Image (cartoon, rainbow, N blue to C red; front, side):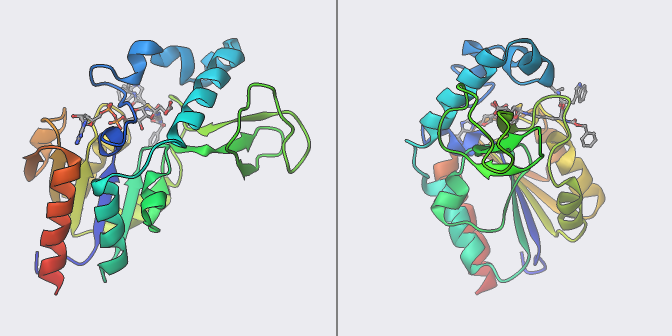
Amino acid sequence: MADIRNIVILTGAGISAESGIDTFRDAGGLWEQHRVEDVATPEAFARDPDLVLRFYDMRREAIQTKAPNPAHRALARLDREWEGGLLIVTQNVDDLHERAGAERVLHMHGEHLNAWCTACDTRSRWTGPLIDRPDCPTCGEPCLRPDIVWFGEMPYRMEDIYAAMRGAHLFVSIGTSGAVYPAAGFVRDARSLGAKTLELNLERSQRSGWFDETRLGPASELVPSWVDEVLSQQN
Ligand code: BJW
């Protein structure tokens, strides 16, 4: 740890599971109630916008009733206390990292609490429903959609992510199955750029073989103890 200064952390649905937010691919995960291709592609939105808007309205409302868990709080502590570079790249569209107090957070798959106006291309904070086609607060057109990166769309801020990866000494992946690209390939990218790689997950993921080390257990236990370890090396 002594030679580690810059850290990139990738989080996935597993970090929010113990806050009561369903993961995508575990038993009981979201896609069992709604098929991914019915809701998470631009084609699905064009075909059946009411289904997609209702699905996201339901989830936008639900996340606002959830609270950060010890894993989110541990990363927020790391963000406050770590003197080196740090970027928390989250695939999650909830706001639990921010509500725990983390600031160096990048949402590569968008955010439930934003709406994107396809008429004027602005994003607005949005906590209510979209099903009734409210007007965009900027241009007045009723063209708001969830600010979520769907399959086939480009994830956000890839240049910022790769800039952080190029300087990273350690890449840590927390609670993600490694099923969805480009995030699934970050571990391979990080390794080829010279970073050490660590996975924290409830069970082995599709990408476990690509990590230098994998630790298995619930994020609410693994993440606080890893953060203690990292910060104790700094002091
Ligand atoms: C715990 C735990 C606990 C549980 N403690 N752990 C063929 C080959 C390769 C790629 C493609 C291909 N065909 C198409 C593609 C590209 C496509 C893709 O990857 N498809 C795959 C299905 C193959 N990707 C895209 O289209 C992306 N865009 C893109 O590629 O653009 C082009 C590009 C090119 C070059 C560079 C850059 C870009 C866009 C992907 C958008 C993903 N969107 C979603 C839906 C958002 C909508 C919504 O929220 O409703 O984002 S998909 C869904 O999966 C969501 C998640 O962010 C993402 C990842 O899921 P995650 O977080 O890993 O969750 P799970 O459920 O899979 O796993 C949970 C994990 O937690 C498990 O491992 C558990 O063990 C663990 N866990 N409890 C710790 N308590």
